[in-house]
Length: 259
Ligand code: DGL
Image 1 (cartoon, rainbow, N blue to C red):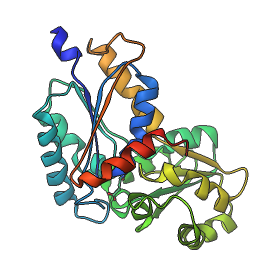
Image 2: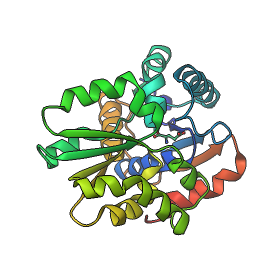
Image 3: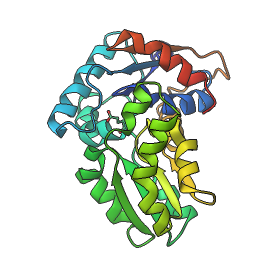
Image 4: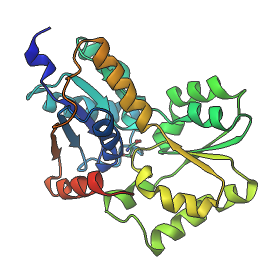
């Protein structure tokens, strides 16, 4: 292992700005690492596109990042993970490639036998990977998938509160609140930025989880195992890039904001 490889950044990719919710966990878990975040807001949302197109777009964006080098890839997008993680692992065989999936496991662990509502994009909840995930945990809780077309667009537009978002969430979630839900899984990386709004519609006592911490810890574990973890305790940097350059300001805001 060359010292140089260890000093390369970790690539973090999402269809848009949602991946920042994963990036902030990565920074928290590995404050000494450098990160290179790229969003593809020109083509977002990915979650309403066919799987083949999502795979192509994800491969193209990662290939673009590869030009400046990285020592690991985080697909900070449930949708792109579902469509592209296996082919990406076949392309980038010598570095860790970590994805994110809806956090059903922590939800059933904390609410055994409970009703778990999984909010995600239409592509994620319709994908085979998701069906396998549900199958794995179907004896441990009642898992209810909920496609949320239109929700990531609020976050992409920087609309993180206000009457339109409240009305959208109220209409979407009201039937489930009435049915009685124990936990909500935020199965799209954009959704943690509207966590408080989801919590306030669902009411007190409903657990809300997402997969960002698990993904960050998994990348740390994989880098450590590969001898690629930097031993600095702080001082890491973050480089932002988006196919829509004006999004970079929103990315910076979301990374700093306590939402
Ligand atoms: N942030 C992405 C995810 O985690 C999806 C947003 C999109 O539809 O592009 O699924």
